Length: 138
Image (tube, rainbow, N blue to C red; front, side, top):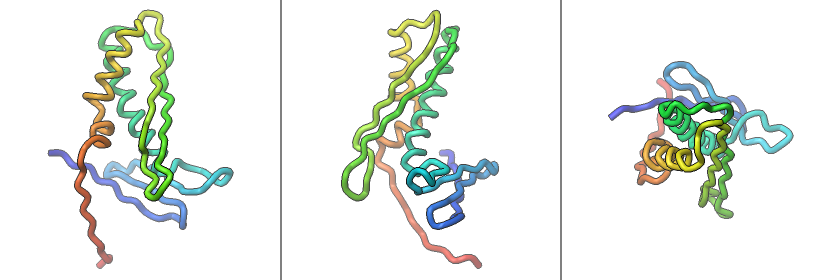
């Protein structure tokens, strides 16, 4: 079983920075427009889902030796009106521009990507155990 680690550090009341063990950083903020400078945690969840499924879909199409001129995913999440405002539905619209890929084979690749290979999608469907601890620096 592999593990991942991220440290989240407060920069200001509504601003945070997440850093993984390799030192890669992601800025996060909870501001409303026009003060928004980074994605919110819920935006990042949609981005993670899209990124995970995109990599698998593109690699599978390339394995089929298909030419990809452009590729993107439009992702829309519908959130619960109450608190917590979790996602109740997520729609991923996969768009590929390819002179030699058929819509049918792309549909199969997308289904495999989201339903079988994407770890983020599987995490959203699974029963995750959360453990918390409170620490003070020594």
